[in-house]
Amino acid sequence: MGSGFSFLVTHSAAMHPSPASDPGLGDLPESCVAAVLGYLEPTEICKIAGLNRAFRGASSADFVWESKLPANYDSVIKRVFDDFPEGLCKKDIYARLSRPNSFDGDTKKAWLDKVTGRTCLSISSNGLAITGIDDRRYWSRIPTEESRFGSVAYLQQIWWFEVDGEVEFPFPAGTYSLFFRLQLGRASKRFGRRVCNSEHIHGWDIKPVQFQLSTSDGQRARSSQCYLDKPGNWNHYHAGDFVVENSTRPTKVKFSMMQIDCTHTKGGLCVDSVLICPSEFRERLKNF
Image (tube, rainbow, N blue to C red):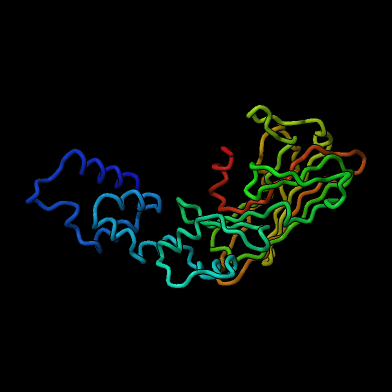
């Protein structure tokens, strides 16, 4: 409905201007306009706000934006922010929450998807327990613009590979998917072009990697074992899904990936982050 309404309003106003004496869009009461805007997506509301004064005023109505915020947005604010400004209107609260907001020592970021208002969460490699991460013979931290956290963990070579993590967060009700964002090879820029060094890539085609997760309310998921592939590209590897039914209390999620067959070494892998997002976003991730 949103895109259709936007198209209708925009083209109707442009192609059929009303005489000054006839009622126009600007004569609609703000309350009526706001009631209609409540059915649109946040990005569409912002576009339509530029039509005239009535639409601009209605687009800032608290009840319009409260319907776009998660039902437990107060809990989200308390978890993410140490100091959140008081007295903000709901539109400004939505705008603030739709940015990637860092917390827990910049090891995690949470944000609302700008189109749907659904909650997303990302945990950096610095916020994960990685076997051997402090031994520079095996791992190194690499700064990169390709990570929302500014750096990734790069594995040169190791026998025992395991990455664990956990997060406790007031997820709004819904179904969520958890992904590991990984890349085979080390990317860099040469003469302004992106290149990928595949020198250390080995071992991932011999034995598969196992991904799994569990939640504080007893849910468990384990992915089918998969071989890491597609060198030089960031890929989201699906670990599993979980359902949040009660958003009044935080959900704790534990997750891991491992390849612990010690008959061979493996290396040449970049570990960027773990992403938790609504399950319907899964198709969207294929484009990244």
